[in-house]
Length: 550
Image (tube, rainbow, N blue to C red; front, side, top):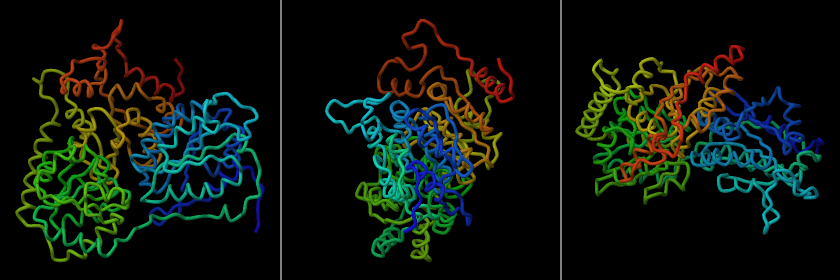
């Protein structure tokens, strides 16, 4: 067996470069980049290894570890999980800053490789700077906080351990069913230790989407359920987009006359102009989608985990005889809520169901009912988005702002959002005509995702204009990666709604019987009411890009 002597860090970077992915017939790097903030825990080992191969594996410098990891997560979502980015930090605060972003990737089933530095495996210099000492367990470090939000976690204390650990990492990152964040915790002395690695470890590997085929008996049962249904409705989740099944979904809905609602993750899986698209579904969904799902006797849940905002905490499905058919690559999701499972890739499922349902179509009265609900929803939505009249009192509504942005946008643009009141308004009103035109992080509803996430989307789709819409609360929480976007020359269109605080939660506070307290600026304990000039912040970013100071 031929070997090559490398440090563990050199071996890791070389193995990452060897990973490729097939995208629309093209072979591309699976890891198109690494985000890095260097510190004493990763600069001397992994930092030097990344420098050696920086032409093959680009390194991006961020301003906040959480922001970098959120950008990497959004990149993977926009790339439909066919590519992923890695993020490295030093030990201690840098590693802990990535926990929130790992939670976002975990909940949304998105590939993310985290490479935090760790304490010395030898423990001779303990305690090192930034080390957390547990009084009862000498094996714990700050990185152990990443365990609950990692699909796979491994601590590398010897250089040869990288071989099985990296293989397991790639299994998770490329598996449609188990996909999620991976943490390889890199002890800082081990990063610089050498080992004779087999050359085969660095062989080029091309990864492709695994298309799980249906079990014949499950498929037969699914076909029978659909044929017996009088009022079927499809709920399209993010799995439709990850599978690349949007064209198959459109054809299936047209051919079978079945209306479809979209989750926040599934929005843009059907063009808004598709006659069977009822719009967003759930608590923040459209009246059309919620009307048909309330009467449905069969819910065909496709690539969705059916979280509470989708189901209205199970208050939306009002037909006492309703049944759920769950199409999902992950059996964990397919088995929820006593559903009939069909464990299968979404595109494969729709093809198999279409063949098994040849000649069958939903009853015309049901298809017509859906069309009427859709027409009414579009009419009301257009009224809500219309420009304010000359006599309108007060500021424009969120829907009116969305309407103004939408009228200026193009079908190829992508709108990005994550938390607050805007996700509800966008799910009801934004018209997405192309897959990926709607990018919402609502699995974790992570404030601060918006700006870093928009940068990740732009890096994944540089040909598209990226419009990020957010409130002042999210903007103030995490905006440092605006500077990164300027550094990288990646244009973002930022639409900020200044609510003078956390207006969405203030409304929830009032709706649950509470007094306005500690959400809006005016209801906080304060000596000065802050008037923040967000326009001036935008001008400062532009001045920096143009090379001006002051």
